[in-house]
Picture 1 (cartoon, rainbow, N blue to C red):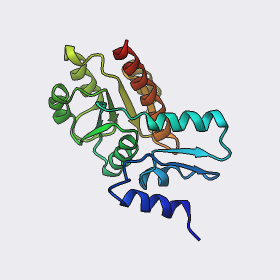
Picture 2: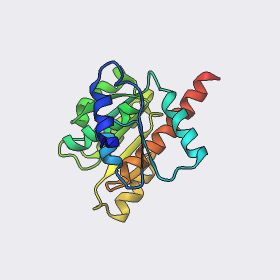
Picture 3: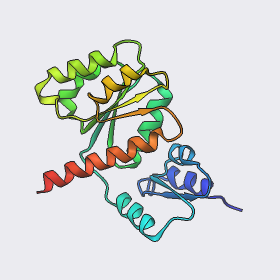
Picture 4: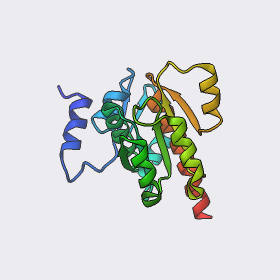
Length: 193
């Protein structure tokens, strides 16, 4: 008996077909496992015809030239984001240090920045202030990923400075992906017109 997980693992091991998007379809919430094994997307059973069609079309339409800068000092978080974002067809640049990422931004021209808020080397507020000072970087959307220990004042201040504030939890990656897809599709539409 062959499971969908073993088929996915085999597909992603073969270099000739590993690039082909795979959508996992399950009744259980196993998105993290699916993305970790290389799935491009995940659908809950039962999926409607329109949801299935939209998901397949989205995964066939790969986004070349999209750079996502992930700034977080947590290795596991960066890895999970890398796998999920690369499965979208996006280039992922990882950085553990806010100062280094500020130096790289001009060179890599990210489409968006995913910023971990609880890093040791630089306060996220300082990073956002430095980013705002760079006139060529002011329009780069920043999506912030926070632990659940934000106070109301800190949360409100951040909400005014970032595109999206997501607290770490079971749906945080889904929320980031949903907003990034929308932002990138908006940008692709603007550049096509």
